[in-house]
Amino acid sequence: MSDTSAPSGPGRTDPAESRDRAFKRGSGGGRRGGRPFPKGRQIDPQALEEVRKTLGNRPRRADLLIEHLHLFQDRFGHISASHLAGLAHEMRMAMAEVYEVASFYAHFDVVREDETPPPAITIRVCDSLTCEMFGAEKLLAEIAVETGNDIRAVRAPCMGACDKAPVVAVGHTLVEQANKGKAVAAGRAALAGKPEHRHIDPVCLDDYLAGGGYGLLRACLSGKRSAEEVLESLGESALRGLGGAGFPTPRKWSLVRAVEGRKALAVNADEGEPGTFKDRYYLERDPHRTLEGMLIAAWLVGAEDCYFYLRDEYPEIRALLDLEIAGLEAEGLVAHTRIHLRRGAGAYICGEESAMIESIEGKRGYPRHRPPYVAQVGLFGRPTLVNNVETLFWVRDIIEKGADWFNDQGKDGHSGFRSYSVSGRVKNPGVKVAPAGVTVRELIEDYCGGMLDGHAFHAYLPGGASGGILPASMGDLLLDFGELEKYGCFVGSHAVVVLSDQDSVKAAALNLLRFFEDESCGQCSPCRVGTEKAVKLMRQEKWDTGLLDELSATMRDASICGLGQAASNPLASVMKFFPDEV
Image (cartoon, rainbow, N blue to C red; front, side, top):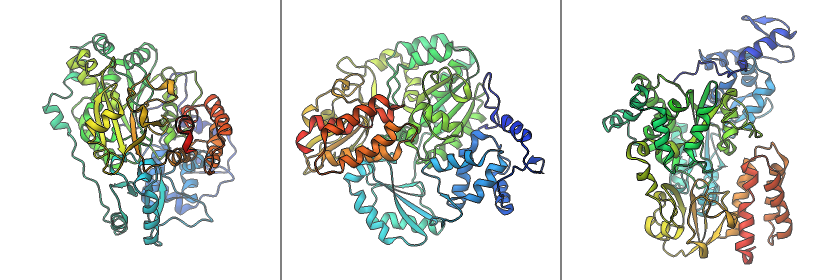
């Protein structure tokens, strides 16, 4: 994977070149190693040497700041103030620029000079809705009793493994269906330098090639398939953006293809929506279907660079992709583009496409104002195609088997497959590939083996944390785009969480609003302040529904991005459909 190409777009100056000129214009006192040494910043020589040793010969580009911060977090278990100062100096960036990024992301432990570094090992206990339903709070308390000076236990947001609840992460390595014994043992193993790793068994490149993989890409690159032919075939399908928005994929590809200038492509694999784990499912099993879809898309729209943005909670997938992408390069299958694997750092907001682009550029994950849209001005100012993992996964099959094959999979007027991430009080949770338009009742009975013994179906989340909460009496609604909006809900990324008569929808809504409060990027006050106020009001024994209604409307109407606009959906739907419980 190449990360040495200049990231600047048409009419844009390379960020590193801009900083070089700024430093040369400044009056910073003295130079060292040919670089300006700015006034006002004290650089610890030992820390600077550690910075240089840690970075090695990696480029000092600003867009790689988050990648570089990961190096320090991984090596030292935290990021010290002296390392931040040394890194800012080495990368010719303002200390404020480096600090604001390091302190924005949850997976960076920034330690000031007057603070004590955290213990060597951190056990993160997922406290998202499904894990809370299966005892996360009790588990956190039990683990905390067993930790000492070298191990700590902290709560953490959804880790994309709701079907294995409760889960914890030691470092970032997942422990499924965790209990106190398993979690503490994994922590002590990591402390002894023998960390436990999950085993995954994906379709590797050789197996994928043996099954006809990349035959379609080769046909595209050789001219046997024209871009117009591929786009027409895809255009006849009902493929949509399956990360949540549902925008028609052929139309998006056509829009980006028609724009002039150097282009980029970004794969959004930052599924942070509580209840969602389908990207993990596909990438751990058959990553090359998504990679082939990505490379075909890059060829079709003319993207010179592909950025694969993967959430940090998936370290095994990151190691897998590193290996498999290197194999693709050796096979000569990426001569038409360059692949850059980028690592998230624990920020739900970066699932929003423009916030993800900001993160890829090495900045805080702040959503951008629109217009311009990322298809016009995206990564480094370049027109950018953004697609979800599952959307790209279906590209090869649709083009090879025909649009009718895909379209005919749906039911009741809906087209295509959908991958429903089902968790909660069902016997067999997991990713269920089902026809678009299936109902939650069908998912429970036909795909999940029914409800857990002793539990009766009470309520469900049709679309993850932001999709609202519906009662069991509405369990025959079709789960697809355009079906639930009239009820104030939506399917989003098709994450379905099933609640029983032993669960409180009031407590569930509070759990979700606490998540949004913690994950708000803080850029706009309707979301930043609104989520905080909502949590305070929802902690009261009896909800002030009038005030909460007013607060919800303000958040929906005034927030910059979808997080704030949809954050109040859980509480609004509980007030509407479960008035007796609030």
